[in-house]
Length: 274
Image (cartoon, rainbow, N blue to C red):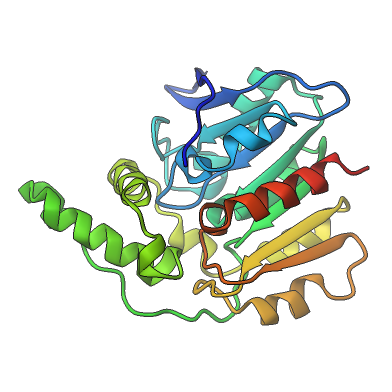
């Protein structure tokens, strides 16, 4: 399954570079634009199984965040390298005072929480397997190094490494790691220049959510290895009136890829509700 809608890409200038924004669908009456943010070592294609369905309900914008995919790398500081160019190009594209909704996956969830507090005019958040939680993780093992293999041109071996790394962190079972997932992950890893792990791994998500007064939905796959969902539900959701949770059974970290139909339904209901 992949998206079939026509993609319109705008390269929005910022400083001496650009940020690539991919647009799907058209404005929808009484619905805010929906921005989807990808994860670390990712690209807009982290949402490839969701775009068609979501674009039937919302005007969808999916950037390659700065330092990823087609977008320029500015620097490896979180504020000046990611947040500032995201806000500036988002405002160029949509208008400074346009209300929007954001769904962020993994590192994109951490980015979304910061955008919600700095840009304002963000009505609702949905954070899927968000980074920045600072809580316990459940690793299957160390990710395999791939850069030397890529440099050698051994593409079959590179594909094997990418599949193994998807199993070690992103997808819950080998049989769900298809050729499309491997290709997306490989292309994104090769294009990644921004180092997100040192920024998100120490934490900070809880503080950002405390500042955000709007509704936030936090979603985790039952087998997400980048966190312990039960711990995060207790520490980030329980007792907070503006937050909701969903634990997706039989799914790993890349939950919107593994359980696309369920996540699409959840996001439509969340962002369409008043």
